[in-house]
Structure formats: C-alpha cells, structure tokens
Length: 266
Image 1 (cartoon, rainbow, N blue to C red):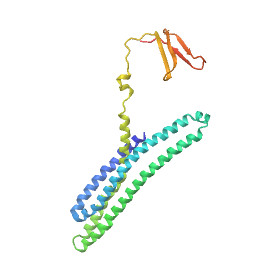
Image 2: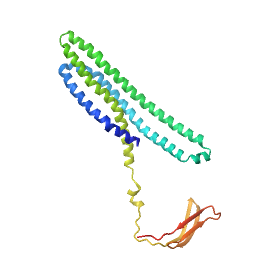
Image 3: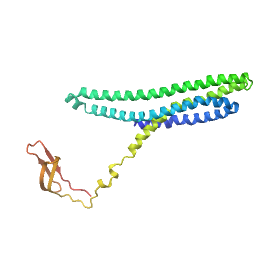
Image 4: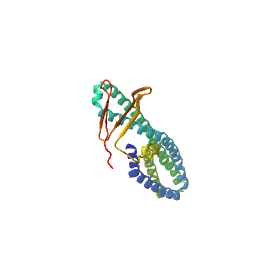
C-alpha cells in the first residue's frame, strides 16, 4: 500500500512539476545562449558536476527505498499480529520478547531512513553549493569582466541573471522530484514482483475437475501421519452415506475428527 502511494504522489504532483520545470529550463537556456554563449557554457560546468553527484546519489537511494518497503511490511505485519493475539502473548508472558522484536524492527527502519536522508541531504547541499558557484562565481565574475570590456551591457547582464535564475530553479526542484522518482521506481519494483507472482488458480495441476459427484463416500485402507513413519490413522476403511455424521476419536479422547457427509446439490 505504501509503495503504490509513492507512485501516486509522483504522478499527482511530481510529474507535473517535472514537465513544467523542464519546459522552463529549456526556454531559459535558449534565451541565455542568445545573450552570451560563453557565459552560458561556463555555467554548465557546475551543473554537470551536480548531475554526476545526483546520479550517484540516486543509485544509492533506490535500493534503500526498496529495503524500506520490506522493513515497513515486516514491522507493520508483526505489529498487527501482535495486537491481534495480545491475549495469547500475555498468557505466555511474552510481552518482553514481542517488544524486543518490535524495537529491533523500528531500529532497522530508523537506520534505513537515516541513510536515505543522508544521501538526499548530500545531494541537496551539493546542488546549492554548485548552483551558487554558477550564479556568483562565474556569472558575477565573468559577467562583470565582460561588462568592463564593453561586450555586455547592463541590461543584458540583468536579463542574463533573471533567465539564469529561471533555469536554475527548476533544476533544484528536479533534484527534489528525483527523490520522489527514486522512491516511486522502488515501489514499482516491489509492486511488479507482487503482480508477477502466479496465483494458485493459474496452476492447472492444482485444479481437478470432477465430472460426476455422488453423496456417498468410501474410505479404503486410508492412512495419515503428521510426521513421516508415525501414522495416526492405520489402514482405515469405512463407508459414509449421504447425510451421515461420523466421528473419529482417538484412544485418549483428546483428538477427534468430525466428518459430516452432505448430499450435493446440483
């Protein structure tokens, strides 16, 4: 359920922001190249470094998100079973054991979240630093030099600054969407594993079609064992007519099997 929720968040909000940010960045890039191709190309140096760091961070984050889904499922599933069987747990005085199991699961989840947040923080801080370097170091330094040389007017400089902000802002926004994208892809991987599992109904060997059914049943030399070579039933033979109720009781009376044969309805 949480995996599908991550996909919904990406499609509902992240995808719209991604498309809009991409269009804004492309249009701004074209206008920047018209003003000053050299300044625009210089600003791409930190942007390329940021792209490399982001790709490496996404490779680290994706398996972390996959593991988080598994840990969440284990912790929540065990907690649900514990709360559902609380009477049994208290009856066997197993509260401390179940608390320790839940504590270990929460600790695993905490370490997973910490690892993903660390990778995301590194990516965000690096983007802030590199994009700041592009705007201040390259644009102001090299742009100021071109203004002093008369190759760039004051109006073009401010226009370049404004367009660069329009191009950089979607890129920073895309880095945040990248985390949603990575989480959604990890969720899709787990969902695909579930969807690709073969159900019992699809296994033709498990399904036996009976052509003709009668209400009477006959058991001939039937044996049964919970463990190998330890038979509980030894070569039992009897007939059960439709409507009969037959009880098989062990020697101590503690184990019994109630068999009721009903007349089939067609």
